[in-house]
Image (cartoon, rainbow, N blue to C red; front, side, top):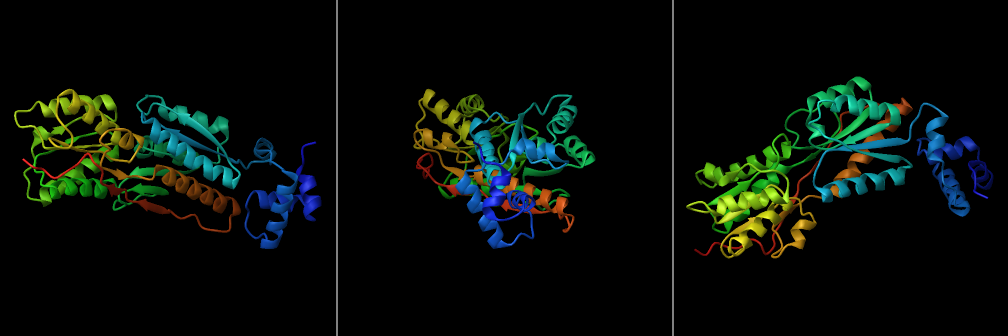
Length: 344
């Protein structure tokens, strides 16, 4: 027969309430008591009934992740990172893909949160950067953590995980400049994503700091997709004076740019260097492998979930003060074979 919480309490020699407090990772439980309860749980192979926990009272042990992102690798890493933290802390996870451009997006999220009785929410771009979504969540009085592009210089009133895209894009562009490139093009991602603006601004800042005149012909408005990289690179390589290097707003775009270069009989990196961003599997599945900026999406997601759970626990205990906590990640430059010193 399946073990019950009563069995765990009897084996550990504690009350059912104490077992519940240990399972819920509540504060003020002695370390030796936690160890006894966890030993009993392992011996009995007891699995808490999360549905029953949610129905037992007003406390929910389910969180949600809401996203609108076409990059499957990004989404999978986000889901796995959040799910790992949920499993560690005894929470369930509801994953809700949506269309951020839908005119009913706010109502959709409100309905989902209410029906699912969520304890909290992790949101990633572009939803995490939309004022109407943030206002609606604020009105619902639900705990949420935002993953956003930026360095935190602008004040944010909600818990955030900042990804320093500007600084990383600056370093990628600086790397190309240090290789002797002066004609450096940029293929952007979707408009409306702060990451697009941050990476573009980092690129432009590095160009200007090097004393290179910005050439608007080298800026291609794209989207976060392989097809956009193909179209963008084809356009750039057909210019009367094509660029010697292309910095794509993410690895998927960069992989498309590399494919377009091959279709145009342009060798990489001998005739054009190509760099991406994020260090997704796209960057390692191409040939040559892509220079990029390593963005630890799985770790970012895990930290976001951990921050959310800590905020939920503080609110429930009533013993601590909720503070606007911010954490930061700066993607690191990864140099691979797709970039080399300009020889011509």
